[in-house]
Every structure is written in structure tokens, then in C-alpha cells.
Amino acid sequence: TMAIAYRDAMINYYVNDVEGLATFYRQHFGFRETFRTPDHGPAIHIELRLGEFLLGLASIEAARAMHQLPLNPGLPRGEVALWTDDVDQAYAALTANGVNSISAPHNFLETPPLRAAWVEDPEGNPIQIVCHRQTN
Image: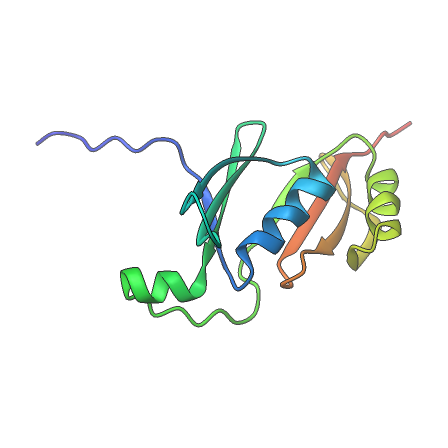
């Protein structure tokens, strides 16, 4: 039998406001839009890239109608984690720009020594901001 090869993984969030969340991820984290459908009118799916990472924002309503997915989004079951050089600086900038905080910057793990904070997007999806901590 022939082996099946998978490639080019991405994460899709099922959301209520595709355009609003795309704007949020572009403005606050520097994602750039690489795909949208339909070309005209309200988007039902937008893809955003940051480095090699691809984040899809898909309309809950459209996914139910087009694909009969039994979507009932509840509590967050995932998050986007973004590495940066200075968690405290990033967290201060995000919260100063009105992004909601979930967890203030704090140290965790010793191997490797990490520092992280969490904010959330406008629909309550967690975003982890994380960096390696300097140990002297």
C-alpha cells in the first residue's frame, strides 16, 4: 500500500466575526492576509500568515451550512502561541492598545527557563506570548 503524505499544516479557528478577528491579528501581531473567500462581500474564510505559521479564521455559520459541521464552540480548547524576545514589553504594548489580559507575565519552567503571558482575541481565544528567560 502507498503511504499517505500530509503537508502544510495550519490551524483554523471557527469564529463569529471573520473580518474583525483578521483585523485584530494583523494590527496587534503583524499577521498578513494570504487568502480570503469570497473575493467580494463579507469573508467566510480568511487565512493569515506569520512566518511559517498559517492561521485560518472560518465562519461558524458558513461551516455549519457548507460542511454540516456540528459546531458548538464552547470554552477555548486551543490557543495561538507566539514567541517574542521580551514578553513584558509585548504584554505592555498589547494591553496599552486595549487587548484583554488573561494572565500577566510570569516565569515558568527551569529547563528551559521560560517567561509567558496570555491575552485574548475579541472572541475569547487565548494567545500565549512566550520567550526564553535569561538566567544569570
